Length: 455
Image (tube, rainbow, N blue to C red; front, side, top):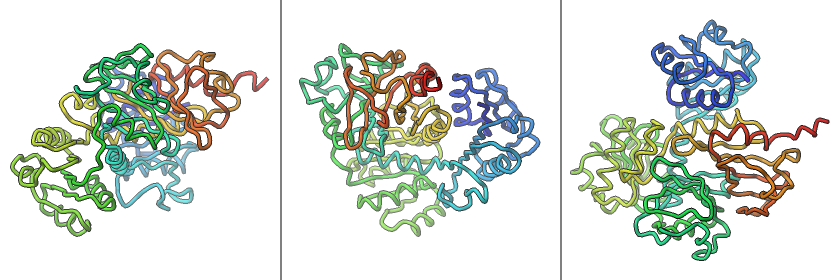
């Protein structure tokens, strides 16, 4: 497979990184020659200097041989034109574009086969809003990932100092709780990512990833000592596209919401568009303003400005002043493992969502979704078990999964199964797997067709 990536920013870089590690031929196009030089020193990929909307540059990148074009520059227009050229001047079968304009989405007729012919449109801001809504629905979690149409949840959260589970082996948890619908797939301890076993011990400050069915989310969080009271008051700082879409969504939940924006003209626009939200003109990192707005009575403080340093600062100030839970929008993926250590309860990263959607088109087998975790050393993904793959109709204890791989949950019809060694995957099951990225290639061999199928 050959893939052309247009845009060498965070999304383009991390997609290229994933592809190069798996031996897929990738070419990155960008105007910034210095940035491309940095990438070529770090990754085994080709680079081409120029505009992704130029037919000549696309030809030089090997458009005639490519099977996919991924346009993720900061310009919607460049991304759309690149996909249009890929459709009209080549036979590239898959075209993906990042489209940030809130008036455009994947349902827009503009992207149909008779026009721009784009297979997947990604709006990072809309994905960020969906991430926040999941956190509001599951208070106590720092990350919420949905699988099997939302019936299976992967929750990420930190263990607090007073949690009853501290010092307990994982094998002992079932004695404290039924445990039949929960599985700890990963423990993040400092810089280490640990795939646990029954003898693993939970420590103060550990960050856990757990899989459970949707109906047990709050019960699970309470078991680990988390406050699961639904929010009643929310403050948002940042009145850009993300802040506005988020405020609109929260209004529909009948939750009291205030939005703080620095630009007076933008405040007027927000006030005209929002129905119930209170719009405030000011600096959301100001202690004086936050005290005036009774920050200590706020259930969620959500920082979604275009300045991630301001988002981090605002969240820390709000937390210090008494906000129950603080969430920051962070675009730089390398910041994510750091912010939870300084007291921020949750992180939303639109670029993670974009990467997840794109990887879905790259993975082999009937993969439904792919989600990078933490600093992207691991992934959680959902696939449909094929009748002809090596993992079906055999007990887990007989399958040699790659090191660091855990099957988190199985959805079979109306049943959610948290597996053990005797569990058998049946054809058609929706399966959620957690694995180190280094094991992806080996794992894909298990998920795809057996060689004897062709004999």
